[in-house]
Length: 204
Image (cartoon, rainbow, N blue to C red):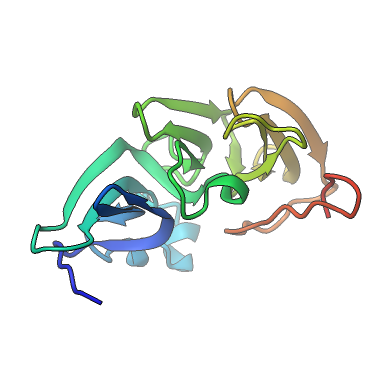
């Protein structure tokens, strides 16, 4: 047991943690402080006030021994929230890809899906005007050979048509594969999950 100290920051979501040599790599979506909470009160959202409801993907390196300081670096300097990874294959292990909800239109709410390559810092984005996606959930292909071999599932609000749909994206390229329309708008939510059904790889 030991204590390591870093500069203060605020976060809602932890992405992943793994042993990286003689350090622990801890990836978190960070904010400078907790004022983001004030932007998420319902009255402010209903007033359509500009918000910055996304943080930054940041890696903290925590030394496992000795007195070396905790270091931090931004892995991709783009807005990101509701992060997901390939948990089945990489939770608690070295990994490469993070998917999440992002913001393309400055001051708007979550209006895009983002993929970050933590190794290179490159970013891919899916965005369509008037569409607001929720958390993208990764579902691996049954015979996946790569970390990003699978699809992303996200419930998207179509503002113009006042209804929602399930969006299916290729997790590797963010190319759109399909939409499954709902007959009404589904209230915005933060989190979802994918559960393979018995004997198959279906949605439940």
